Length: 82
Figure 1 (tube, rainbow, N blue to C red):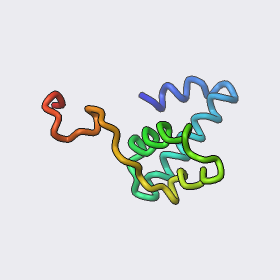
Figure 2 (figure 1 turned 120 degrees about the vertical axis):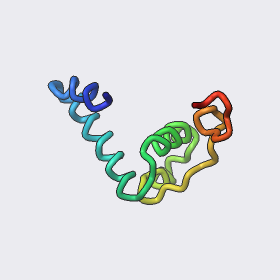
Figure 3 (figure 1 turned 135 degrees about the vertical axis):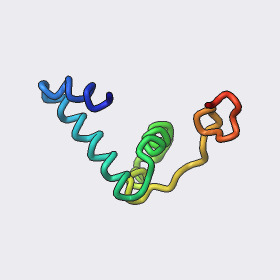
Figure 4 (figure 1 turned 45 degrees about the vertical axis):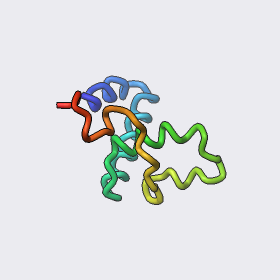
């Protein structure tokens, strides 16, 4: 579904550019045995407070997961989840 959404914008330069960036991040995560969904979710939540001088720490090659946020999607013992 995500691929179809991204390819809708590939006729325009920016859509193809963003699709390439996203696919590159996902491939890097898989190469380093990191779940791309949790990586992107964690990095997006941390990037606004992370110092610019240490931004390379958030790249998949040197990524160290932060603490999991207290949301139902991260809780394994949540009775509301199927």
